[in-house]
Image (tube, rainbow, N blue to C red; front, side):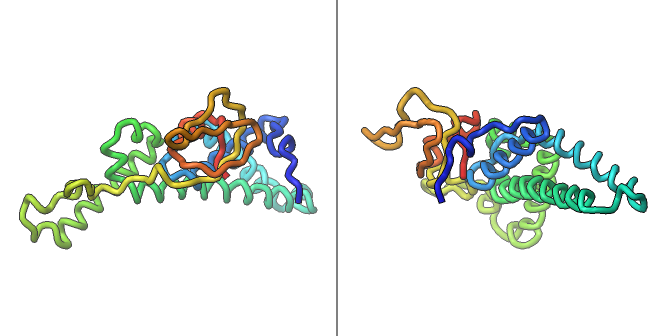
Length: 214
């Protein structure tokens, strides 16, 4: 199958299509990126409000002629598709918060990537986790050995995302300057290119939207 790059990069025409396209892009980026990306608050809010309005409309039309026929079925299928993407996006973020909770708390710049609800979840999760560890085994250890953020040599107990992991990406906007990927090794980033690179090399471009993960 031949890839039509112009078709893949074509911009949606309506606001609804733009928001759904943006949500899908944020979802894929979040799933493929090793780090926790900034929360897409604006698009999530708009998509959630539209979903709520559509669901209320469908519930109101139940039992009427408007609730029958293929159109109603197609609307429900479309709503389920959007809800799947939204739920997967949020669950992916919660999974990263579970895995890297201490790391996130220790880095204010990363903490800013969370929504207010996610920050509440992080705080509660860390409190419960620490309480569980203390009651299970940490209280039996000497005080100097019951910390969860010790560093032994160069090895830290705090789990952190692997920023050097390889990722597939698509270039959405041509980058004028060459990208340094290794010592004395550079690549060009032209619109439509699909590349396999270390995440750390393109992390900033992912955050700005110039590059998308696939």
